[in-house]
Amino acid sequence: MYSFTEENYLKAIYKLSENNRQSISTNAIADLLQTKAASVTDMIRKLAEKKLLKYEKYKGVELTDKGKRVAVDTVRKHRLWEVFLCDKLKFGWDEVHDIAEQLEHINSALLIDKLDAFLGYPSHDPHGDPIPTKNGDIKKSEFVLLNTVKALQPVIMSGVADHSVLFLQHLDKIGLRLGTSCLIEEMNAYDGSLKLKLNSKQSINISKDVAKNILVKPV
Amino acid sequence: MYSFTEENYLKAIYKLSENNRQSISTNAIADLLQTKAASVTDMIRKLAEKKLLKYEKYKGVELTDKGKRVAVDTVRKHRLWEVFLCDKLKFGWDEVHDIAEQLEHINSALLIDKLDAFLGYPSHDPHGDPIPTKNGDIKKSEFVLLNTVKALQPVIMSGVADHSVLFLQHLDKIGLRLGTSCLIEEMNAYDGSLKLKLNSKQSINISKDVAKNILVKPV
DNA sequence: ATTAAATTTTAGACATGCCTAAAAATACTA
DNA sequence: TAGTATTTTTAGGCATGTCTAAAATTTAAT
Image (cartoon, rainbow over all chains, first blue to last red; front, side, top):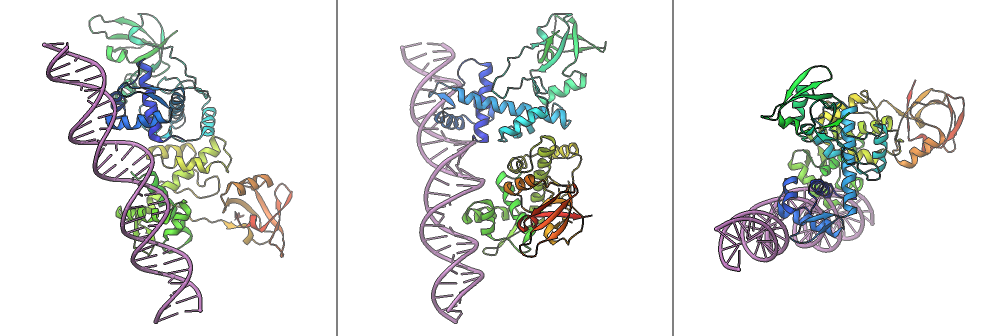
């Protein structure tokens, strides 16, 4: 249907659209995909011809409903494969991204339906990101950043804002994982670091840089 | 490492080498890959430069050890994914080939190791074909064609020689699947058809065309 | 052994997706 | 608002993998 490359462009533009509300610039796409602006111009003209996005020269780009659907489907595939890799094959959450980048381009609607069922219709991937439904609906995240939570509010760790290997391994090391219950015991006004009390009764200190990349659900 | 296309060429040449003992012709490869002889010539020159096969103009082609290893690894991936699709996702054995053709090109040695473990280190795929080991060893099949078995010899159905959707669905329809115990009650000298007694005590008639595409293991 | 048929290779072209360098348009700044 | 800086597009080119048509080679047949 659509090529590996086309799907990657649509996914990148979709990702950029989630943050920015306006149209997406050529350079932003080039940065995200680690390619050159000239290559992006070539590709977006092609995608515009296929009605996957709206493109006006020098004005950036916006996905059409058709293009958004392709992007969301690709995200759905990516996240379901990540669940498979972690839950079934016992990969760490820091190891799954690159493999899922490949698997997300496998073309078979039936495969994804059956995978979804096999995994028990998961709602979130191993990093806490919501998995779009078969119909292309995707839940807006109800999670908040840990650094915005007030002291003594019990929360459950539910996602990460930084998906880098380094950050995920750091969380592993300090013993934070999805599902961990905790609350902020103390907030350091000077550097924004937090003393976190885990439900294991143990307390740990985390920096502001860590706290602002952790998504939690108040309970 | 190697492109999708390169892996497919190597796999095709490997497959053709299993039957023919001699070097493989350009046309044979073109037929199997549904492409043109001119395209094959281009590609085999490229593969020869990479030392994946030996090529002499007008003399056909033969895989080197290096090329054979890439082919066998691809076959291993293909067959492991087929087991996954049938055993875990509950696909029928007639539905898995095309999806496995895509999945076999996913590039991650760790993924395949973990998949192998998850599946319980299967020795054969859903069609009875042996799965090469991690080291690239592949067992020569010990199965024989049902039409070469003598009457009253108990056998277990263990594989198929024809992998077409039509044939596999036919076997489904007449109730033959891998693991079925049976023996030949009667052999029709006129048309080579067989009366097969299943271990369910039920008897069925199968044509010679069917019998010669069923692999069995004598017990 | 010569000719005819089949196979294989070469030559030249095309599509995809990428690049660099230069031109055009837009945005910023004094 | 003029002039500079940045962004974006165009132009031209490259690599991969495909094709058709024509040439070269091998195989088969008389």
